[in-house]
Image (spheres, helix red, strand yellow):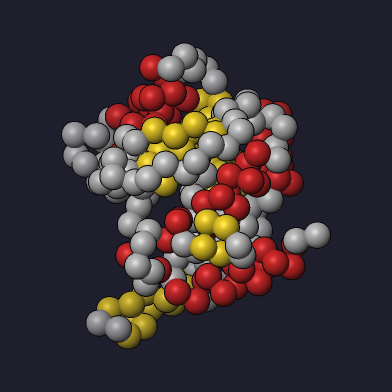
Length: 224
């Protein structure tokens, strides 16, 4: 099953509405994301976690929505996992958490993550080795060059067993999920070492205004 946190405001995107609802290549950004997940045959259920005040996405086959989004992405995921458990999902079930704003993910990338995690019986995430020189900044100036060896850029989906992921996030709920930037970070703090499965530079997260034009160009290039 898949869980898509979709409750963020997307302030950095510079759009009048949350970026996940912005029109891109003829449909809402999140609808491209959901279409990619729907094309993965092994995903039997998709839950979209919306903010309490958000409108529904409309009927989409295989897609459920719940208005239990929180103040942070981690809280939205935690609440979404609780919803899955309350509606019959087992703690041993695998769940893929994927950013609504990563609308360029492909079924092939999702399948690659599923294959690797199932083969090794461990949770993991899509990621890319850091390709560029990394700088430490202070006051808007570069003060140190950091070694990039062994550093990866985390992407989504991230795939873990439902129960352990819910527990790992729950351990930080009282602190407002401070320091939890993705599911893997919660699992790392629970003494796990998630698998790194190579993703793609095209699996970008639409974050800044210029990202929309790039994402639209890529989406249109894929259209039949």
